[in-house]
Amino acid sequence: MSIFALLLAPLAVSVIYFWQAPRAESLLKRALLSCHGLVITVLIVWTMNSNFSGAHKDSFGSLAFGIVMCVPVGLIAVSLIWYRGHPATHGLQFINLGALFVLYFTAAMAFYRIKM
Image (cartoon, rainbow, N blue to C red; front, side, top):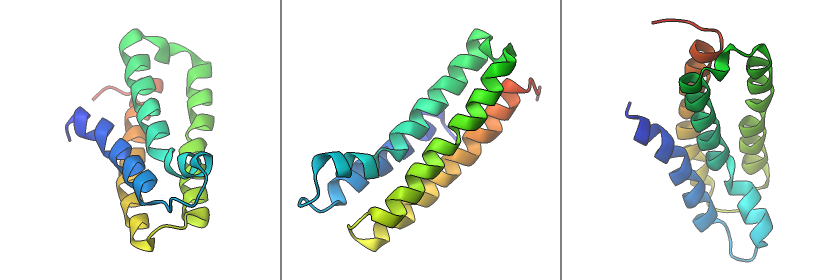
């Protein structure tokens, strides 16, 4: 998988969620319910930066990353519950879950110094 696809796919899901949300919803609620992909992309960039900069050697980094990984999962759960757009839009969450799996696998190699 290309790194660009890994970065752009969750962002595309967020954009689609935002566009498909009913216009009657407030802008803040639409942004909250569609920000899961943005958070995943930020975590991917954080992981790549930590790996390339050597910051992965910090033991606090792995703990912080483990805690922060709960944020996109929580945002996905919130969007599944509160989103009032077309129900088929939820199928796009499989893209986000796949990106989270790749992210977790990559982060495990970076933070726990697993060499391939």
